[in-house]
Length: 81
Image 1 (tube, rainbow, N blue to C red):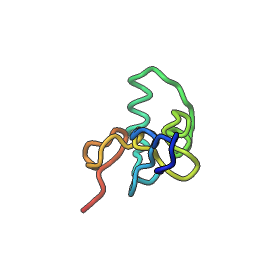
Image 2 (spheres, one colour):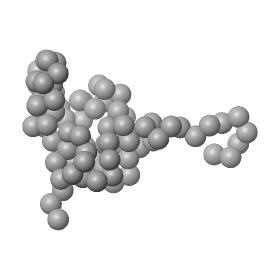
Image 3 (tube, rainbow, N blue to C red):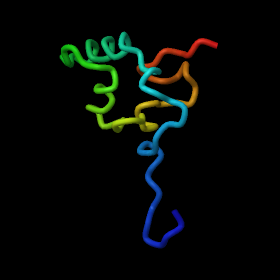
């Protein structure tokens, strides 16, 4: 991290702590793709953010989990309290 010549990754590229693929709402993905006029057919929930390059094999990047507040996350459902 402190090595000369290296820059930390931008905020959007860092993985979102505490956010998992289980936090993503399939209904909101469907609503988003319908509104955007995108046809994805049947797609597994984890494959959708990976296809947008906002997730890797195991984690969602901050760009895919737009806010630390569950109620503000795009494409997610709030966790029950």
